[in-house]
Image (cartoon, rainbow, N blue to C red; front, side, top):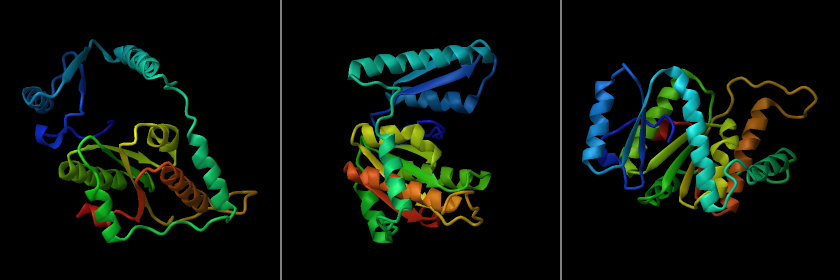
Length: 232
């Protein structure tokens, strides 16, 4: 789970596997202490020490090879994205005005959505927000809050760019994901030359298209407008 802050053992379920990449000669006592606590609690922890920063190239190869091997065992092409096209087609239909967008979830629906998450599941935060430092901070706080409350793995991605990375996992992966889409109206919108819609309308259509694709595959997915209800 990329960029998920390292927490104490009690916030993790039994579905976690930790890999720590460290640079020789550099020490982070706080991180080492937390990794030690995870090991003592029985969580699997692997530590890989890099001689220098150029060893990152080696790590790219290591994990790409591991991904290919795991894909062969599972009988899938781990580098394909067959389900991404579903969201694209839905986006076209939204822009064409064929179906109205789904309304945002109510507070009661959000509570019901979160209550349904159980151990072994994961929660995906899909933020159709400007990728600013302030939103980074706010989303990280929401993510940490929900992980501590629910004790499940969390992912976080800015839309629509995550559609070509974790978007395939969301729709074509194991049916254990719960998907929380966070949107807000663009403060400043810009027209797209030659198109009858703006960039803000396009992004909103992409969000709606992906929401429909997830629901069409039976994935629990809801939308909320803005972050405040989850920051508290």
